[in-house]
Length: 223
Image (spheres, rainbow, N blue to C red):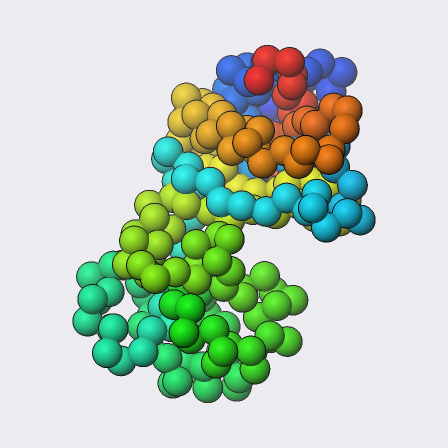
């Protein structure tokens, strides 16, 4: 069965987005609903600070992943975000828990005045990519809105040291249309973030894959 599925994919072919989205949703080699990932190799020089691309994308259909949000909010503002969808709400008690090794969350949302308190957590949160950042909307004067967006499908991404953006874009069960639209949204966001100092080809290679499945090369010209 696995060989049969692999045989549908020719590693020498660059598939258009429609075909690639169909193929990746057929590549389920697990007993669970596999994640669909995208890897985008960009023509950027990661040694230059102004080419370290980072941002957020509001996927139309989310990613199918449950994101646990920790809202680090002072007591006087807790009431306003009670119904925001945050999984954990508080401040000093959660800061102390993090210092003691608690990390059962995926995203922190906070307000500007709290950032001074988070400085002591830099060595814990920084290496794990969990430190909130104004550029990604996780440090904001409107935490309620930010939490709602994250729960609805907003995801952060950033280029790694090899110039690659890697992120989940859905589940096999989404079907190819939803996967295709999620990919298109990410591509559109990246186009707007292209640094003016980046010369030559911006989108160098794009691959889709499912959990434990083969990579499917996407024809960049089609995008």
